[in-house]
Length: 60
Image 1 (cartoon, rainbow, N blue to C red):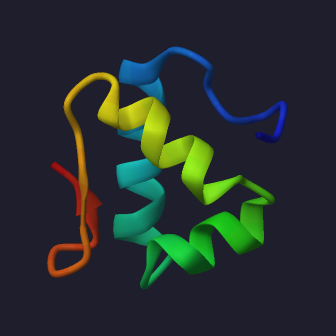
Image 2 (cartoon, rainbow, N blue to C red):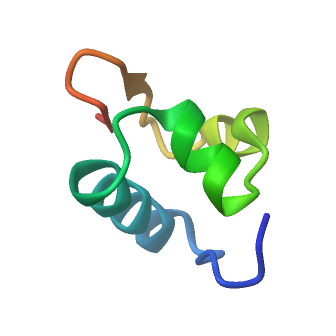
């Protein structure tokens, strides 16, 4: 992951959901644009019980 991406999972969750809400129509586009490994991101957030929901375009 990029060095500008928060490391703490709770802060990461807030950052990613804000980015998805304000700038990106999908998780795929966010990851491509920011140079984030999508599998690594989803694994890190699933460790704190958050799963990406395509319908709402956020981690819940």
